[in-house]
Image (cartoon, rainbow, N blue to C red):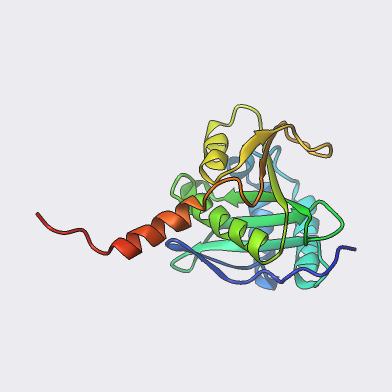
Length: 196
């Protein structure tokens, strides 16, 4: 089992909030993984029984200090928009690597939720969990997923050996600034724009 990792904390991400995946989210998790519109950049939707098993397994790991997964529910104004997860790919969190994945309901896509959520979790992954790299994979020809990964500072790479999807992305702690959070901080520091 991996060495101890920090538990997933609640995070703020622009106008979105991320809360740790919990017992009451099992049906949401399974519903996201069985929805064809949600899964279009990831692969074929899961069968219901497979999605239920994946949700239960993820929750077990979420609740263990030595668990291999950390998941968040992405919300806005109390409405669940989707799920963001990290899956450890190495023996240890500190100095290791994790795969990042995001699933959003279709009505929440292209609204800034994924950009904000990935930016917040990326910072947590590197600064708190001590990861040395994040990877992500998506289906071939999915331009919105490619644009998202570039926007949050990931760079194209060869797919990981165990990846089931062909388009690989990688991010290291020093690769790029934290675009969404840094832009928000700059706006807050500047204050309101003068009139006229």
